[in-house]
Image (cartoon, rainbow, N blue to C red; front, side):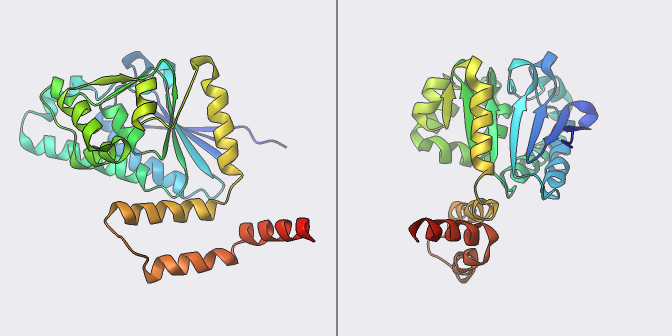
Length: 263
């Protein structure tokens, strides 16, 4: 019997976790606010990600917004209280850093499924994902300078990693919002598809990723994290990971199939 997808609410329903077989979908669920991200959502994200990590049946994660937009930014209506003094402002950015670090650190592939606006805080979430698949009508940007605010160091690092220093400077200093086509040219978008084909394209990518070795994907992410942290040469640990690959079921089965075809 096929099990029906499950849906779990977080942050009073402003976040949803939909699990359907090997694929979990994290939904930013404030469509009437174009999914503007509030503090409750930032605070709930690490626990939601931990719940995904604890489920071995989940092989990959999609992140999308409800109602035609990924996320239009942060919930500005909270800013008078958040920026009333430095202490709540520091707590706010700390919550954002914890949320994006949790998403980035998940040991499974994570795809941002982007349509409509992906601006500011929304782009910060997308940058914490491994891949960004966009509708051709999507708009992406990091315009905190319009409000006299800042991207955090971690968000800025991820933007630079995606688009390079020059493009990141233009986007941040100029508060530039770019098209999906430009995002693809900059390296910010992984793929761009016509809006009416985006769902099928994301589903195809998800199927392709779940057919591959989860062990390899998890360890590739760990190695990339070491490189991002400044590691430049293999360590005893990374060499051990390379050697341990030969013990995995996926490798053993793939090798047997290959040798069988040659026999």
